[in-house]
Image (cartoon, rainbow, N blue to C red; front, side, top):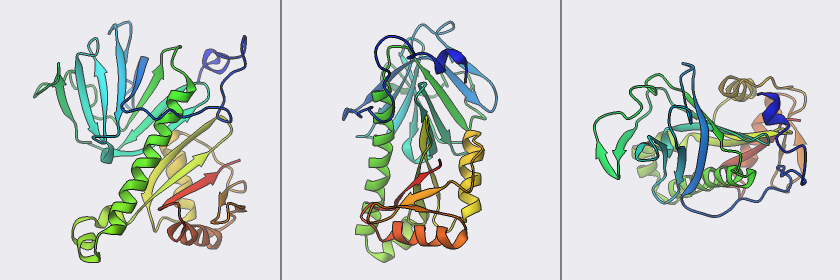
Length: 257
């Protein structure tokens, strides 16, 4: 994180923060970018090499599209290849992906075989989007809302199926949990196994997004929307049980401050 991004809204009108950001219900969500960093390889795309860069999040098809070459070429990545995301008040959006994630390629709306990135995404496990200055925090918060909506729909779809179908066709999804996390100026979500341990969820968040968390300052909201501290594995088991049986459809909110 550089000082420019930290101070971008320090002058002039009151800055938009998470407390006053309002997600917009639009489909697709469009974000024009000045840079896309590819982790862990260190490769990147930016507006010096490509006049226009962007990313689309399409809830109707459950896909995200990396748009490059003046937005004419698209790399389609299904939502089910995403393992987590992070957004920041200083306006960054990071999407973590499964290794060797599935993707398709399009040029002017027609599917093609050639990779328009020339293989830059081959070893990628995370894409870090730096939006153009005119992109508001409200737009990034809309991405957070869209992923929460997607995971809720997935959970409800599975719950409505009979147990044999769940066992045969949806065993992985049925054993997953979506954990949203909140810090002071950053927040996001990770998809993890339901049986993950307390140490496991901390390591999952830290390793995917290079965070250093204080294990003594972790809380969750229970079914009555009370903030409850998590101090050890037994507290964590209670939190998971309440999430499983709450009206939040398999989505847990963790507060890491």
